[in-house]
Every structure is written in C-alpha cells, then in structure tokens.
Length: 134
Image (cartoon, rainbow, N blue to C red):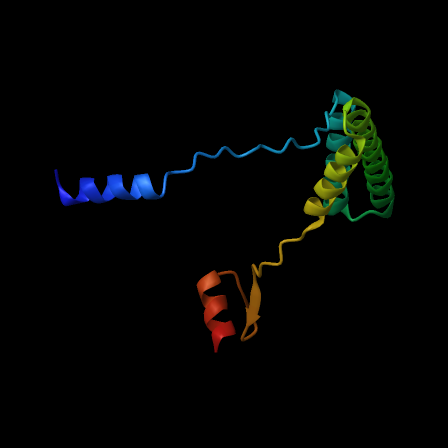
C-alpha cells in the first residue's frame, strides 16, 4: 500500500467526511398573467415613444401606464403573499420568509461601473481600480 492510501484512510477514519445536504429555500412565487405582460408592453411602448418625441402628452401617458402597471404588480405580490401565508402550516415562519425575501430584494448593488477620469467617462474596471488606488 502506498503512503498516500494509508494517510487517506487514516484521515478518513479519524475525521470522517460529513455528508450534508443543503435545503433549498422556496422563493415566493408571483405568477404573472397575460394582462400584466400586456400592461408591461404598453408601458414600454409609451416609454419608448416619450423618449423619441419628448412630448408632454406622451410623458403623461407613460406615467399613467407605469402607475397602472405598478399597482397591478403590487396587488399580485400582495395576493401571492396572502396565499402563501394561508397555505402555510407555520404562519409565523411564512411571514418571516416574506419579510426576508423583501429585504433581500432591496439590497442594492453598490459596484462602481463608470467613473469620470480626467474629464473622460471610463467604463474599464481595471482603469477605474488603478485610478482609485492612486
């Protein structure tokens, strides 16, 4: 027997490998229906039209469609949360799952993607790092 085999067996016997399985956390699922997809498409079309024309009436249309879309998303989220709580055996745990999923969604990515260096906007991460390290 080789030294490596003897050492591996001795270590396996002294410190056995732990077999673990990770629990997958079930995310709160929000099912989007056809109406929501149509509202999103309408809002995106209105937004694109406003960007192209810059017209005030197009801006107002875009804002109203955005508000309607946001309200619909909020109601879907609220309904799915209520359904999740109602179907749960442990109501307290279900509430905390919803709260924690909301907290995780609000975490913002604070990475620096562009920086103005010597009057020029730079997107290269290596140049940004070099500039910040000076």
